[in-house]
Amino acid sequence: MKEIITVTGTIASEELGFCQCHEHIAMSKGKSFEINPALCIDDMSKSYEELKRYQSHGGKSLIDAQPCGCNRMASELYQLSIQSGVHIIASTGFHKLLFYPSNHWIHTSSVSDLEELFVKELTEGMFVDGDDASPLRQSNIKAGIIKTAYDTEKLSPRYQKLFLAAARASIRTNRIIMIHIEQNTDPRPLQDYLLNLGVAPKDLIFCHMDRACKSLEIHKEILKGGSYLEFDTIGRFKYHSDQHEISLFCTLIEDGYQEQLLYSLDTTRARLKAYESAAVGLDYILTTFNQLLRAAGISERIIRLLSVENPARVLTQ
Ligand SMILES: [Zn+2]
Image (cartoon, rainbow, N blue to C red; front, side, top):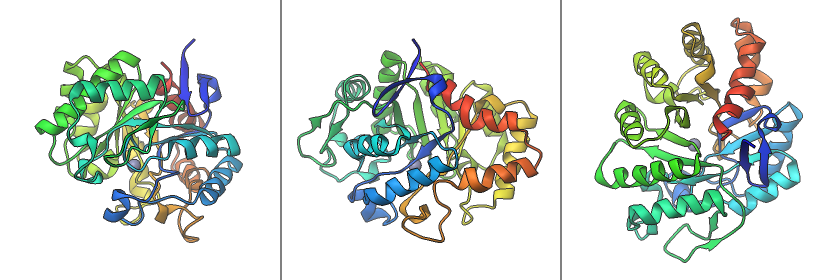
């Protein structure tokens, strides 16, 4: 049977429901916090509060996009899912290398070591206590996707090594690769690189394209290549308005790409109501943004594609 891997076990495609495909609901205090204090979500009572509010407005599932060895909280994601009833899909893979201490194992691991690590996390269970050079302990809580990051270094040798390991792990396990795209970075060479390695285009999600990549021609080329785009600059007014966001959706939907679009909020501590009462909160798409899409003429059918059917299709293998 084709299934989705969540932190509490596998679920059938139809069980996924409304799913935001790039969130952060738990993140321990570490190197990420040193770089940006908003990159720490370590009060689980507040995470639980956000999940329950999300659920009360119709949220059923989400992807937590914090990858391996980078302040990910695998055991806490499991507990949060059990307590709240929200399905959580966790990530193996790697983040931008500046988010790891200089003595971290990720800098010195070989391609095959990284490949084995990613495969084990997807098929056996995620490792915990792995945020620095200390030994890793394996849990039986599985990751469901491979998160990666395309930095401004692009395909430098050290990132090529990481992407090669991710590609091999994806091919071996049939799990998708989700890619952070850094601001002002053209991801087309990365799509070519991964497809040439044998990754299926439908197994790639390019994230943050709505703020990282101004040219809609580049968006369309990635879509023509058969991959998914995930937009998450929703309610992030320091980048652009929701009206601008909606205009991106409208243009790509008019061009017929509605089955390759996903959306989310890419939450940080500063964007969760449980920490900042004026923040948008994890339920913002359900309470506010979907209404704006409807007001702009986007049909219920399309909203269901963005929030339910496209996530279920991309995650089911
Ligand atoms: Zn993120």
